[in-house]
Image (cartoon, rainbow, N blue to C red; front, side, top):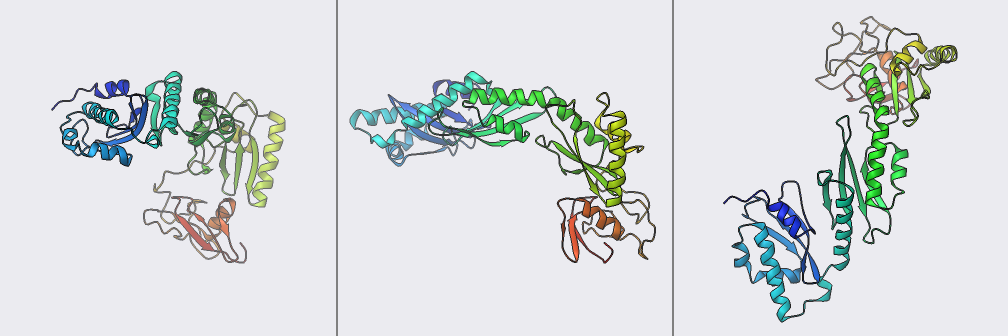
Length: 381
């Protein structure tokens, strides 16, 4: 049997308090019978076919429908099934008074409030999911750069009174704190969009920097991250912390590495910053190159890509004998081709904030593939 593609639209029009998932296999909400409403959840695994269709509702409603199972099974469409359920409950109401605790008046009021505000504030394609009796809502916004942004939140049963709680969002903490102060879904979504649009220049700067440098941390930068730890040389890295809403100012800089590398790098950076300043007309990578007086920023080699000659240290890029030892295989990942001098690896791990250093060993992640590893500390380390 062929079901018209318009059926979901017809159902949403006839029963606005019934919502569906993306593939129409789950329908959930409230059905109205005269001035009352009751909650129901329907599972249609083969939609639009009604094969193996089932539903969940209160025990009393289920008992009312149980004696009409044969009629319900004859329904060839979901729309017909909904009409049939309502007809059965109406018939029951005509001969008996149903329990007062059966009806979900407050929940229906909440669902109507949420649905009306969503319809007023944004288009349907930006509403990804509504669940938990209309308390939890998942929205999206696509910016002009083609990135999709997700906003997941819930409201209280007393909405629009009470707080809107943000459950999932990938934006800087400063923005999240601002969003948490709004009172309505419409205000929340408008501020969500405005914040994203205002952050686009900052994200473009970060993307450019990620492509032109070796980002040590975060290992997988997210939209919420306002910092980057950039490798400057073998034993020096800097943590750049940006103000995403004031790109005219230069980032705050923290120096990490060996004492000698930090002292030399800091001296160059401060001296050149005082002499030449931070140039807004060039990107962050170019500013770092000028301020640290280097030819170019180190760039991370693609994962598992062969580096140099066989058994070459991945950190210093040399296969020389150091302390009577050549570079060794420290990483247990069979796909990782990295080799390291012991001293190179120890100094690298000591630069990483997230690494753990105990009395006799240090642990962290492989600079090449990210696999966990550890190595023993020696007297001179």
